[in-house]
Image 1 (cartoon, helix red, strand yellow):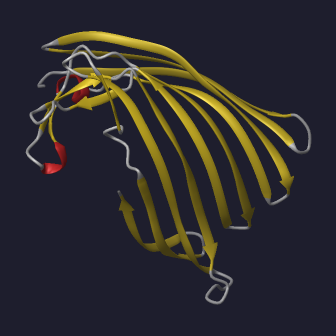
Image 2: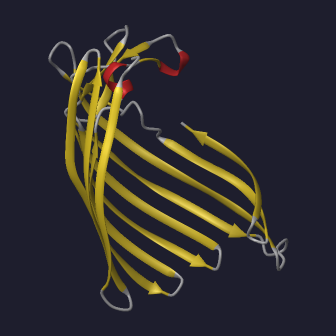
Length: 232
């Protein structure tokens, strides 16, 4: 929409507490205020979010963690008044100026290894979303509309790595294999036009996503890489 205004203001606090030589606690709070104004809607939303993560140093190069957090997402201009083509299929999705914000609650746990510049990390997570912002398509066909679902769940894992190749590495250069892969299962409960509740995947979430590549670094100031990204 021409002339639309969308402003975000935020303030946050963060603290890292070293409990002892092995345990640490990372905590944070954030206040967010979002306001929008365009020809069919003028509104605002705000919330206080935060997180708490406890980490345990297993040994100098290895660490495990567990954490909980709350998130907040106000609808953006596309959600409120957009018209998008779903994967260039000709199926149009229209925005909804009456959307409510989305709230998320996450529990996660993970492990990471670091040796010099080599890293390996793995994590699992579970997220519950309330008022999930989701595209609703009528059955059997027709244009969709962005709406608030009742709730949604995301659960999955992520693996990341960055390992140097010792045969090719020298004093001032480093060849490394890097990448990441994540698998996410989603499930949203979305109200339908006939009053029923349909369970379907979250429209904006990729089930499988990742990248693989090789990178060359010279004297830590220069780097070049080739990578392949994939998603499902």
